[in-house]
Image (tube, rainbow, N blue to C red; front, side):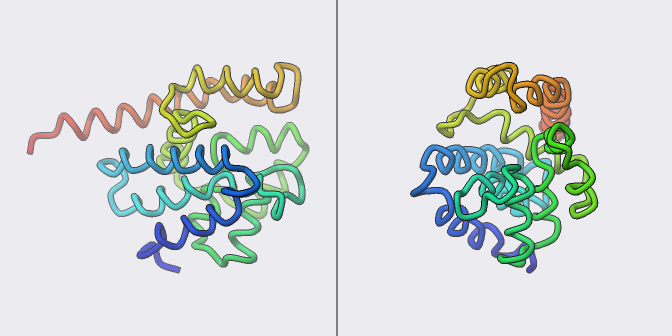
Length: 190
């Protein structure tokens, strides 16, 4: 599948998997996609790819897809095996928001990385930025508050609470890199 029409293809899939069983997750996914549109100036030809990845990034939470309990892997497998999605899109979903660190905590890092090589770092940064600057309800936030919210929701000693605190420096670094790229584009003369 080419990236032409990718956004139009992605939304109905995400909506069908999330809107009824997980309406809050669907609201979050729509908000993450909205954030992605603000990054078009630094994404260029990959803007549609990013928006599609943003709206699909959490489909692995769908009760219909949850097989391993590790949503990046479950979502990526569905996109690859059932939806026959673009490989770059699948890899972005598989590795969104420092997923490798959570995979490591679950003893699944080798499985994740063998099945799904990482996508280009600037795209991984962009998806992390979009996810970590969006609340569970889909509204804008900042990565510090988002990390605190996640740790609070799951509990500081849970696997997710521990993972998100470990990932926090990289989440903040990803956000900083995205903001630096946006600022550089805005400084360029017309």
